Image (cartoon, rainbow, N blue to C red; front, side, top):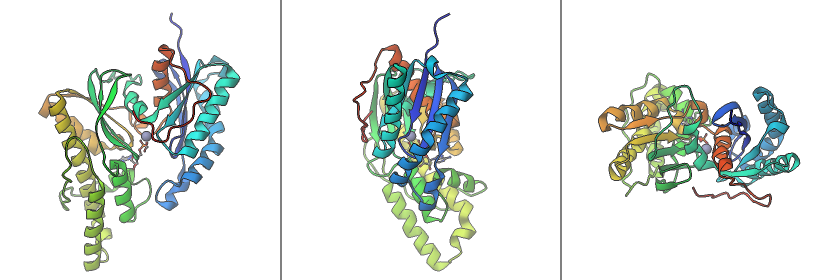
Length: 339
Ligand code: KG4
Ligand code: ZN
């Protein structure tokens, strides 16, 4: 039997401290500690994020090893997110990764977070739903919204992206305006239940090519809410479900329409999604509907591998390990690391 490659992956680019152990494409453990401290500020506070990573990283790593039932000395390589992300947060993960790799005398592998979101689609699962090459991946997270043309694990090209806010930010900022908590996406999804998505109509931005824009929508919602609240101070309370369903539908429709353009331009018929917003069930069902309409094949990572997680970092490193694509100990984080 061929030797299994065991990788310890570390994710610390934003507000989730995560460590995972993978054996080839299988996840043995994936521990995610989501920082609650940012909730009261309605968004991530970078300095508080770094401090929490520093506090969490050792216990999270110990738990990941324990759950996977793996000893440190069995690990073949250490992987970590080298960007894009918050500098202080990335530094905690990379310093920890370097010291582990050095002390265990095993290879260090740096990973691009946005590539890893795409690669999350290849985590081994019973349903064997991984996409076939070439495919388009619509990656929608808190920091990014992009359509990636994927010819192979190594060959990825961004063919469209947001010119301002990301779709995740559109959820988060809308939630903040209507007085809901952070992160806004999952709360808006929950509150949409039972609401009429066509009750309030917001216009779609007109953006050329395969690019996106969400900042105009934010202003539109702000002005709309201001006017309605002036007329009726109880407006939000009385219309919460309809409001959330309408905002959710608008954001998802913008994403879906661009994806349709990308499919028609590229003639690529295999579609995957990734990133935190990809855990949204309405989004998943709208993508699924395209299967029949456009005769395409779609695949989604499991919900826990859509939002930030270290399993996608460890799996990305598995492919690099096979190519002996190792990193030097003097590598430094790249906050604006491009795909
Ligand atoms: O990929 P991710 O976990 O972190 C980044 O790399 O940014 O994405 C976080 C984003 C947040 O904006 C959050 O509101 C959004 O994903 N999100 C959702 C849902 N779950 C997370 N948006 C809509 N519906 C959800 N269920
Ligand atoms: Zn992410």
